[in-house]
Length: 313
Image 1: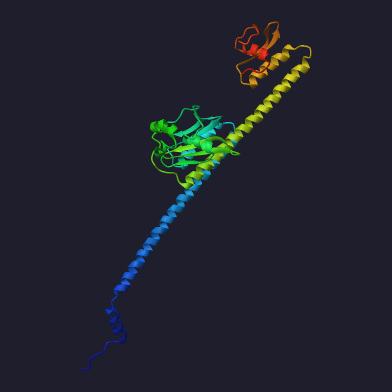
Image 2 (image 1 turned 45 degrees about the horizontal axis):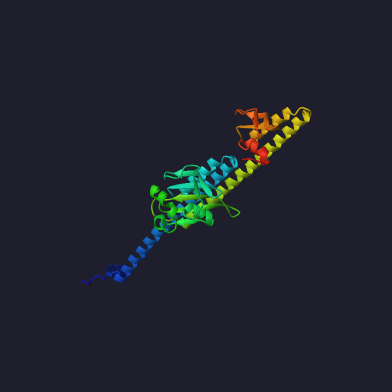
């Protein structure tokens, strides 16, 4: 009986089953899979970083909009504006706190703070010297980045020793508030651990400094305009009294005393006329008691102004 030969297709299937994948190809496939997995992880990391960057950018833009809106809404409410800038600076620069100082002659005093690190009291003045981070930023008119102030206390910042011991601060960043190159103040952020600030955080703090300058300038211009209008109003009122009472000087003197006290924010104002060897009170505004007649001597402010023929402050 004749043997039946297998069909051609069945023979190919049998041979296909018997073929084994070479070890080199297996290794190549494994490497490709590893590379694919690494590429997928890198892509995921990039996506996460991109989302983080976008979120950070949105936070910065939101902070800027909020501060500029506050400046536009309440230009003379400088304390609230500076407090908001300090809060945003500390939060977005990942600092423990933020302080804002204003320059007053050879001194600087704190006007805003956000955070829990101990700090000089409001209004307490410090000298504008290079012996402290804030002072150096004012004197040098540039941003001062200190990676670890402890390592610089003996050589660079000897005047900061006591405050560093009291606060435990380590890394810090100070940026001056400059208007046409003139320092108006400083914004200062601190950390209690050695963690230098990034370039992005340095640029961000400098942008907050620019916003603080805008707030200071707006408040200055607004106050100057307000004072100018008040002075013009006072002058018009006095001239109106003069015009309505050309022969009666008393209403004029009373109007001058009232406007002098109000515009100079004084508790009271007196007008005294020279009479013999003394001077007599002829008009006053306010509740501070004063004698009607006083002898003219250098021991009395009004007497000294009369004798020296100049303003006595």
